[in-house]
Length: 289
Image (cartoon, rainbow, N blue to C red; front, side, top):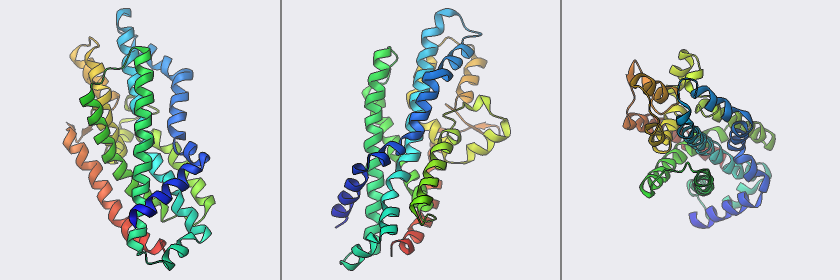
């Protein structure tokens, strides 16, 4: 029964082209900003203290940094957009039709979550393929097959976590208007909270410290470690500048004056997902009625 319901939710989502478009709006905004002007500003700013011979390596670093930002913002925004099917069913009374059938509230709730995860991973894999082709055309694609698989696994973790957070947010929405407002808010904030629009080096230290405790920035670190870190090694930098690049562009985080390891970042992200998942599980049963 869960499989049947999940397929139904997937059809409802992908049938609505505007829903699909708005689910990746944050990623499109990020891409547009960097294609139009921020990309050149970033590259020129990094080249100030570097020789002209390093420009190609710097461009590769920035392009891959933007690519990782697109993946991160999509991992945040797409699950929330996919759960819009639940809001639509709730406002139109579709949930009552399901509950007339021999379907438990738990089964119905799980089907919406599964659909959101599948939608997010489908779009993210599509973005990986398109982004990889674009980077290869520009001559800046450097990920091996093993790293691509590692990237998919990391994105699956983020999708599960942000689906849990989105499920909680959806319980606060009771109308299509509220869903539209929530989509706009999440789409706008996703890039800022994950340091995809603006690198941490451009933010006040107090703001950076707060963001590091939220799930968004550690999630960004996990993706950038896979996508961007190898490109940084290609740039000839003195040790102090190397650290500035790593921490300033979100490849590494710092808490209480100590660097955050990859597994600590995974723990932070997973903990937020577990907390919101438990809250959402209890609240969604009252929503699906």
